[in-house]
Structures are given as structure tokens and as C-alpha cells.
Length: 225
Image (cartoon, rainbow, N blue to C red; front, side):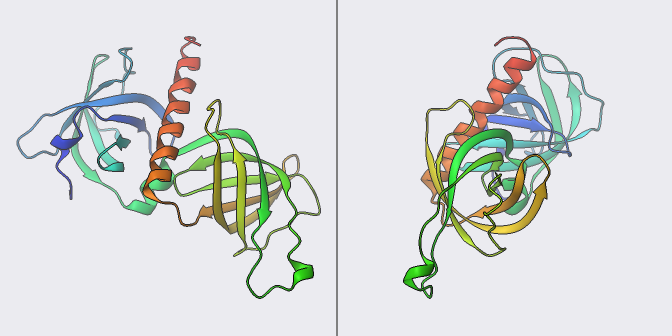
């Protein structure tokens, strides 16, 4: 396991299926066996949890102020509307858990290339392109740029500026590196980017904002907002 689950009691979490679709927002209520491999999860806002078949594998994205972000996976043993009990709970790898903590969005920002040290003065003119961030996780973003003149090859280091995720008032300026490219007929050029040099404080801030936007999404589904 690598971590004592008892220390996560009270922590907020996302409950997702293996296709990364959000099922519910919860709170870890208790560890329910002596071995520490079963946990009880309740709704984070007191609403009913959905029904789920016995043995269904699920993943929990847990946000802890002490442990930062943790990824857990387990199997549904009890799925009552007041709580879920998950058995055989284990941690999954850091790269995998970062990608699972992902939010679909249509957030406006600006993106520019960070000049390389060997580029000449004429090559380093900074051009800022308006862009749309279509998804964001703790590991990176997917950026869409409609300007046809904009193309960043794989390996290009970018600065993403003035990113406001969803309805939050917080603004992010993040450095990232292009890992894949594509083209969309409506969105334009797509750049899948991995964040570079994020410190723990910035990771925690991203976690909090993503989690809050997920909470708003679920409330909208239920007609609360």
C-alpha cells in the first residue's frame, strides 16, 4: 500500500470509473477492516450516492492537505445510498494517478513559445496566441489554437498564461512541454502538453481548483445549480 489509509479519514475524493468518468464526490469516512485495505466513503455534500454493482472496480482521487494528491483503486463491496464500502484498496502509480485527476473544460488562456538559449535575437520574438484549454490535470493540459500560423513541434517548451479554470477566480501561469500534436476541424491545432517544474504549492492549488469544478459539475447534473 505505501500509506496508512487511516490517515486519510475525512479527506475529500473523486470517485471515478475506469474510463475516467466522474461518478460522485465523496469523503473518506473510515477504514473498515484490521488490515487497512477496506474503506467507507460517504457523499461529500450529504446527498445520496448512486447504486453500483458488487465487485465494480473504481478509482478514488484523494486530496489531502498533508499528503497532497493520492490515487487509490478498489472494488465495490457495499453500495448503499448513504455510504460505499470498497475492498482490496491499493495505491496506483504517480503518472497514472495524475492523468486520472483530469477536468474537461473550455477555459481561455494565452500560449507562447519559450525561446531556447541557442536561438538568435531575430528568432526570439515572442508571439502570444489566444487558446482554449479543453482539459487539465495535475500532469498537463490539452490546448487548442485556431490561428493557422501557430504550430509548436513536439518538445517545444511553452508558457501558458492567464489560465482561469472553469469558474474559479484563480489565475495560473504554467510552463509546459509539447508531448503530442493533432488537428481538429473546429478547434484548430491541438497540443497535448506536460507541465514542467510544478512545485508542491502549485500542484495543491491545481488540485483544489479541479476538485471544486468537479463539485460544481455534479451539482449541475443534479439540478442544484
